[in-house]
Picture 1 (cartoon, protein in one colour):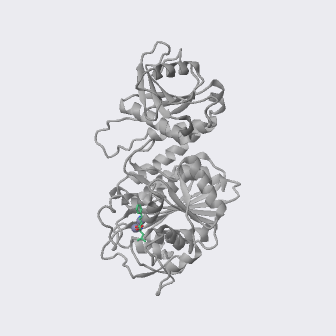
Picture 2 (cartoon, rainbow, N blue to C red):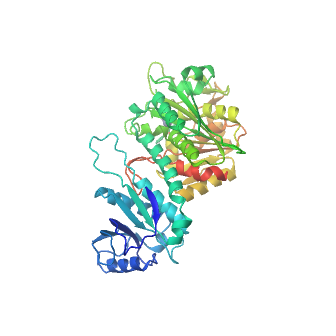
Picture 3 (tube, rainbow, N blue to C red):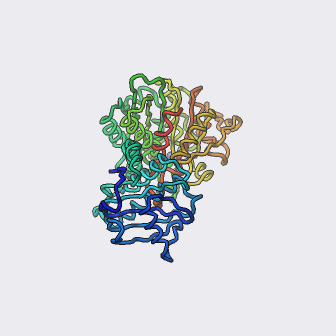
Length: 489
Ligand code: BES
Ligand code: ZN
Ligand code: ZN
């Protein structure tokens, strides 16, 4: 669907040419495009300001049916993310008026401080992701995705970057897979179903797939995981995906929280907090989609994905505040609050993963705490790790992909807040404050000496209102981040 092209605008007919326009500087060195921009800027209503737009039809100089100009604002504000948003916006505009294809002009020339590869990557990501609509639950499919999106580049670039469209499409297809899982309502992704859906898709790639059912989980003593699942009619699952290419030297493990609905359990959440909780399996979706993507890309590191899946529900069989349970690694946990369930399923998954795979690095990703959303807002994930290098690498990949990550501290003395009078540890802190930190410290007690990091995506996993290249619903946060990160750690 994505393609690079270096066609001559004067000769080849296209439906729609879309040109990003800078307010204060030239960002195109194609003379035909420069001429068109000059013409557009003669209009009073178009200056190239951010979000400005104007459309011309049947221009004499070129063979495009329509030329759409979209403002990017001032040059100093134009970074790869601005290009992603531009491409997403451009594609969405075409979809809205039912066009089948679009040709996007890629900015170039001495003023643009972004290297060609990064500009192309960003525009392709924005275009591919912006072209996604999740309308499975609509009877009438009013809007259709574009069939073809071309990027206009110079002839030498068309050759040089010919591998990019496939690579970017593969990674973004992974993001979309995660988005769709997250956006799917909880009644259609109960643990057995969600596990099956992952296993089916993973089975089509070169991945080893195993799914532990309730009986096996009981036999293997996944006590914390089973305690969370106890209130639901749906049984727990643990999906393990292994990608092991020949000759790979190290194994990276990814662990993703898969709570298909988090009601809070006996500590039932109030109205207003329940509504978004179908997205509480976003970590699981990111890990499963990353493994599938890694297999499609034939990466040369071994990756294992460990995905605990449960539904957190209140009922006569649910676990209670005050209960003490025994985790997979043998430590006992006092349940202070049944709504702090993510950390319970994660500790069993983390201990199991370390025991079985002895990974070089282990990263868990989870919609773990509301406190992290309070700290960093809805668009930035928290990173917590004792390993400076690993935390830095995650932050850098976050910067590159604009799946932004910000490190939070893990002070040793905060561990005291997790003390239990009765058991080895308690699943909630004795303090109201610093919940993202105490959540991570709880997990760290089960990561032993492993090189480990935790990514809290409670904020960015889901958006209520669409923007740029992502519609309302699951964002697929984590997939592009991991794909960038895996061969750098
Ligand atoms: N799934 C929630 C965290 C969450 C909150 C995700 C908001 C997305 C948006 C998690 O299981 C939870 O309920 N955490 C509690 C922990 C508390 C009881 C210690 C929280 O953050 O309030
Ligand atoms: Zn919860
Ligand atoms: Zn939760």
